[in-house]
Amino acid sequence: MVRHIVMWKLNNKADAAEIKRRLEALAGRIPGLLHLEVGVDFLASEQSADLVLIAELESRRALETYQAHPEHQAVAPLVKAAAISRVVVDYER
Image (cartoon, rainbow, N blue to C red; front, side, top):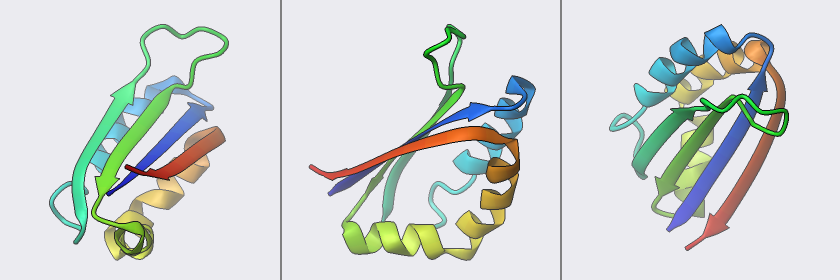
């Protein structure tokens, strides 16, 4: 199993709700994606990211499938346009 965690700092935190909705819509639609959770930060400290995605996938191959999937690719431009920065970690469990 692979865990994929992405955290974004956004230009405008007001975009977080729409991005969250669009990312959560991927659940159940991509083969190998077992679980997907998206959270919006409430603390708003200088060190905080504004948005986090935590996904569990069957394998490294499933992560590749997820990243290349057309529905994921359709959301990516929205997130990229809204983000100031992005930090990612992928690891096997």
